[in-house]
Structures are given as C-alpha cells and as structure tokens.
Length: 242
Image (cartoon, rainbow, N blue to C red; front, side, top):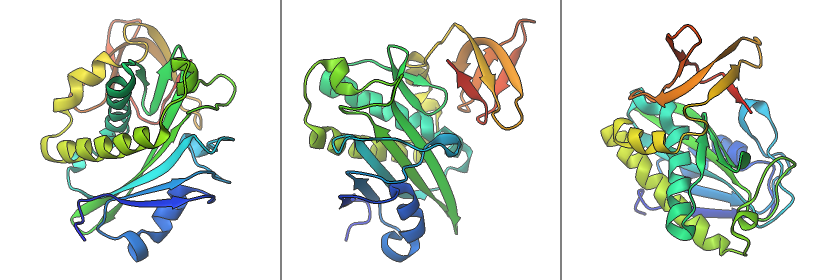
C-alpha cells in the first residue's frame, strides 16, 4: 500500500473519531495517512474539553491521521493550516470567503461554522498528527451556522469531504517542508476581527488580556496591540471571546 495515499474509514456511529484514531493508531493505522469519518458521534470532542454536538448524519465529523510530521517548529500552526485548507475548498467549490477565528474555528457572519481539534504524539523522529474536524452542513447548535444555510441550497457532502481531505493533507506536506511562512499572508487575509479590539481569556486561570488584533506573525503566533501601544503575543491557550 502507498502510505501517502489516504485510507478511508467510515463508521455509521462511534463515540469519537478522535479518540478512536489515537487509541488504534499503533495497531491499525501506523505510518499511514488515514481519514476516519463517522455519520454520528456519541461523544464527539472539541477544543477545551468541550463536546462537539451534531444531530445530523450529513454533518462532516472526521479525524485525519498524518504520521509524517517532522517540522517541530511549525506544529502549533497546524490548526491554522487546517482552517485555511477548509476555506480554500469553500472558495473553490462555492466561491465563499469565510474567516479563521483564533485559533481553530471557521466563522461566517460572526457565527461558528466549523471547528478543529489537533492533537499529536511523538514517535521516533516524527510526530503523528491527529486532526479532528467538525463541519456543520445542515445542522448547528444555537449561535452557530451551517454551510447550506449560507448557500441557501443543498450541497454534495461527499464531494466536499473528498476535497477537504486532499487539501488538508496537501497543505500539511507543504507546511512540513517549507514552514508556516508560505501560508502567512493568506491566513492573515482570512483572520477574523483583524484590526478590531478583542478580548482573550484563559478559561482555567481566568487571565484576561485585550488589544487590537494585528496579525499572525511568521511563527504562527497572534499579535495584538495593547492600549499602551505595545505588542503582545497571544498564547494559544487563550480563547478569543466573541
């Protein structure tokens, strides 16, 4: 088997594609790019230990395993790269332009349309990346939005899923080889609330900072300008409040 081809796994129902991928990687999926999708998850996982909710079997709930990552310096930028990949596919298929909300959500009209959860494990000289993606196709929680509502039409979900897998994997190879800088300008153009005053909070320590959102720098870190005129790097553990 060509280990650079994507192996597809589909479940009608599972507790969590992310949990399954991590638990079964060394036994079933070692050294193989794999896309695991479930039509329904009983315990879907989101960022900050939240549960990803979906009541539609048309929503895309999946985990992509990428076992060849060597660029340790760029590992924290992977959620941004995945978000950028999703927006590239939306633009290609539907001529849509959404935004990346720091640091792992897709937003349209100030509402969440997709979420990303990235986890990793070190195996020898490589890092195995587990990328959980949740895409609202025709259903969303309160205060969210789905792609068919945005487009006001039904879409071909399989076509979208196939292109998402390919684009995410393609961009991960690019990131691995060339680093974040090749994506920086494009991602800054997609950045949610750029140029606006924003508040960030660490939900565990309750630390709060605020400032004008300036840019994502060449290291993939978010820069804000505080009231005193000084720039601050926003830690990835700080959640952007909206």
